[in-house]
Length: 374
Image 1 (cartoon, one colour):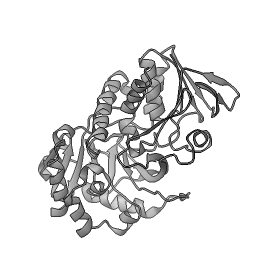
Image 2: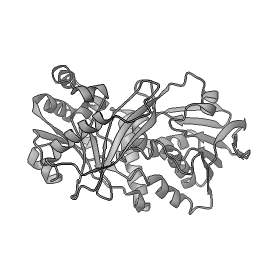
Image 3: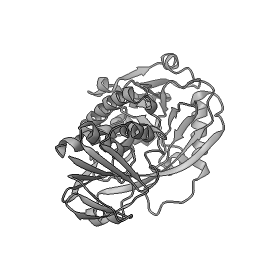
Image 4: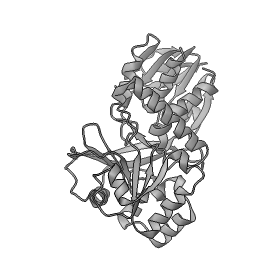
């Protein structure tokens, strides 16, 4: 079988990986020299802890297995089973953590509710004050800025894989055939469009204007090296307000009685923090849904994140090295993990995993392969 994958972000690259692994001939086309979108501008987290129960959690757990398997073959991914800690303060935040512990799928996620001393035994960098911490053993991380490069370097070892950068696919010209902006036609048995947040142009023409996917903008930052290990990923209790696994009467009470600070509420913020291979910290994030998006980054969210992180670490942050904004595509239908649609004869669109893209992409690609009979 011949497969054309359009897009070289993590979702597209995982589709190419699945196809090559199954013995198919793959051409992957990317409009940039390399992917430059949300696949690089994220935490690199394999984030199981907050996923909705049912299909979403099952997909995340399967993806976690696939990431680990791939990480053994491709050490440059930087896969590490680091787990995560969410420190909580006060009875209201603790109540949400206890409700999470009572979930029927708590064991599958590797949830444990730890005392401060137990949490610091796992992550001695957390010197700030907190009441307890929710631990998720199944969370993991990779290096987002280089993961696609590492996967592609491995793919290029196969004679069945071809990478064509700097080409934008402009039209479908027949069953399983697309033309790029160089005028070249690529014919295959299956074309998979993994175009991320690029939802205009050809995607709009094929899927129509009512595509149930929206674009979401975020702001993040990265520090200089911390100077000590941060052995786990770290979240704050505002993440409870954002991730579906924590929905409960206890969360309703937290929202009613202890609303977010003004800046955090205005920018729909949570703290997520991961240490990179060089010792620096990736820290975020915000969520902006209203179009048109701002073209600049705002300082207030960065100041809020710095204050939260320093309160947990009990020390000043290193110098901020980078700030950036990113945009990702998210399904608008409640409970829908990804939008997968046949848009033409032999052509499928796979988009909209939202903030789950880095986590779930291996399993999303595996499902596509199974559904298309690869």
